[in-house]
Image (tube, rainbow, N blue to C red):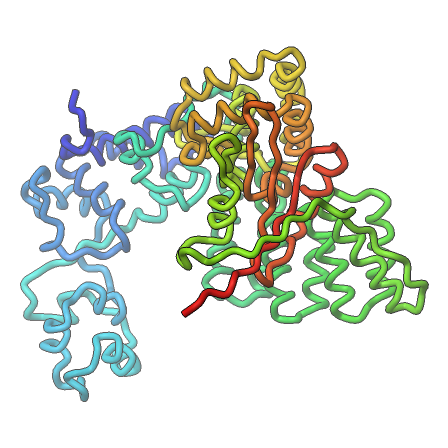
Length: 550
């Protein structure tokens, strides 16, 4: 066994074979005949041909010059590519657009082939492309473009199929084959989760096709395709798969936000009205207000106030309702607000302009007997993540379906907590009988460096952990953790920047820092109000920079 997996020159082939084996084992019943054939035919290939195909799959683009496909572990490229051409997976005569040709050729080669048409020899390659595009708008093979070029081109015809397999494996397109290498090298370590037979997101071929379909809609939107066409495609999609329903809702929400930026109020309103995303209602109220439809905005806001989705929406409504009532000539009802908080005012010299205001305050307040740590969201989230690790990584259906997940797929879903209620209850019960401290310490050692959506390993030193466990009351931890579970997306951010401990007295205080001209954000206001309600020591520190001589 090698200490470095990259010492095996065929490491990438091994990784690709792992993916195919995983898909064949877990998705055999939903793979299409074409995908089954690809897996079987790939296994029957000689190793050099397998390796060459995977090399191309893992590179950017679909067209590759034969001379650039020279790999020592593969050997004779032409011999390796022949079976791929026979299977139809590689085309050596594929028509290339002028842009694709420019991506393959060096500037000198382009000049040699198009010298007669190039009017500005010293211009950039991109300028030549713009100038020549109207003259050469028909795709041609490399041999037709450049008859004298002693080279060939290999064009992949199975990239879409391989991308589909990658989508099925990872559940997204932002993860790629490098995940294997990063994990093998120990750069990323993932929790080992038991994969049950029912723990997969795609339960049928219809789910696979729906997944690919929604991904295509997203790419079309991001590439700038006509909005009405993309919207029609998303609206036409329906599925009984909750995971796909959430993906559809997220796409609609993105389109709604895009329409808002373009001030297309009627279309934005129509999108939000059909969108199941929890944030769509608040956006719809804002759209009604921005478009001048105050009666409809007020009616929806008042209905929402009776049953807000979460604390964030409730906070928005507290601002919106008085404003909407005033606009309709109603009484100027007072807005709810955060009660006065302990305030610190500091006038500090700016010792190092490269350091943030939080670091300046930390240095100013820090004492040996009262250390100050810049933690922001890292400390409370990390303590929660360590204590509740078994609940977070429980192998529930649809939560984990490949070995490279930082957390469960349904982490930000509304039913994340309810699906694991008993598991979380068991974890939080340790706060009642004192077991939590030893559990967190042991898990800190056992899980060090393992990817987690809550634990900030780089910010959580052993010293900080011990001071936190000594000074933070279990009652306060339970309040914080319960609030996190109410709305993970909204509540895992906005926590105070600094925390100061007094280990001798086993006390603490949290400090939110605001530099000149800065103001409290909504999620910060909610956290401060929450701490005030539960008598937790917290202060807001306002900093002004002292005038310095010279």
